[in-house]
Image (cartoon, rainbow, N blue to C red; front, top):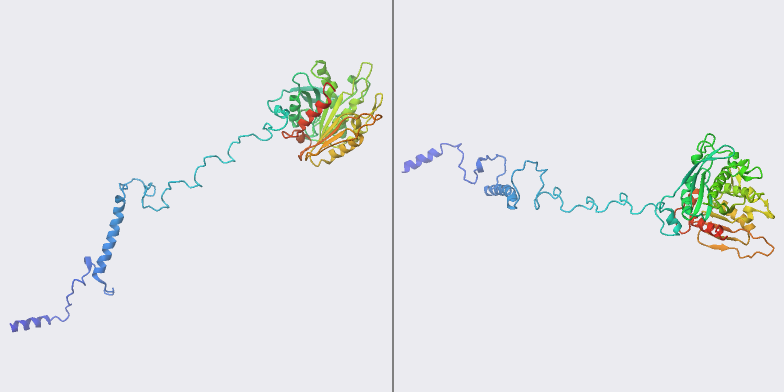
Length: 435
């Protein structure tokens, strides 16, 4: 036995280079070879790390099934697939259940796209003011187009005639501003028609439908002589055969034919002028008063009232000074514009020329004037005429809180104080049948 043990010991020592046996702790897991330079780690710790990694992978694979989601293959891309509610997808990929205020479709349209419930103030029926404004926009006016007018100097004119509904309470000739036309004062004409007036609105030479070769303000301004011809009337003692008949006199002669039909009465004639058209209207009114009666009866002095809207004192060779200084003799010295005829002036705010004309007329009519400013302040004369003084026509100055002028002011659509309301009231007070 002793000899055998000695031999075994000698046998073991015979292999000096044989590696020592390793325990199970040094054996690499799953056949992985350890690197000679790797730090030695506990085998139990390595197994734990691998088990945790395996559990995490299993958890990711099992979680959708545990939550009840559909794990069946989808032919679409996972990026196109709509995630189910409660899915662990990123909240940035999840479609929100409530829409964002910025993405939410508005229940009402934008105020810029929304169809307005009311029309433009210029088309809307006025809810305030007199019934005249309401009637003027209720339905389109009936208009008669007159195209066969010709002046004494050969100018052809076109005119719009607004016939009255029944017997006319007054006859009106409405004169637009230079560079305007019948269309620019159509609202005022239609309103006067609704109030019971017969209204004639000519397109002055070179304007609107009265343009012709040599008379076209869109190409060339009218000469001084052409403008002065518009209110011209005279030449001879019989008016119907006068040698000089301008634009306004030609319109008056056409209205005289209408008078013979019994629809109108030229003895209740009012002329309304806008802008420089007011200066032309005043000049023609004075010429009307220069026609004295003859053996056949009266042939002039048919104008019974004048309304001037934003009148111009002087421009383009025509001046209000000549009309103010005009006189005629019919048993007494008559100053039609300065003293005798009822005159109303309608002006916007800060209209210096209208204010200048009012002061001039006020000086000649110290006992028969009244005015109302844009802020509603009213003033009137408190003086009483002496027995020896001649009675003068009424003078009214109306200032409207608006920067508009001439035709635009005349067509002011609505408000508590519009030119239409003022014109109707003034005509009713001065041209009624009783007066």
